[in-house]
Length: 69
Image 1: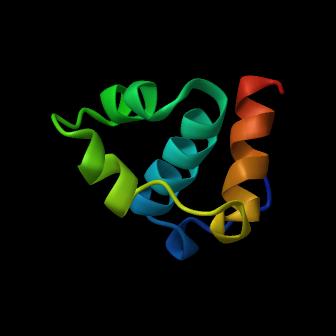
Image 2: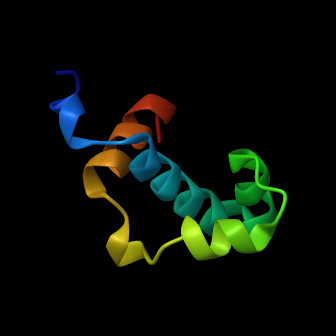
């Protein structure tokens, strides 16, 4: 356990969704889509970018800590 998070509780999909959502809001859908390696922005929009209320708070906090924001 690091940063107070049990690894078994999280998946890479949670991190990808949270990251895609935060990047989309800060830099736009094209950048978020490229970051995730999607050929089509609609894949990113439909499967990864979520509303702010759905962003996993723990994941967002971890990314803030790692990125120093």
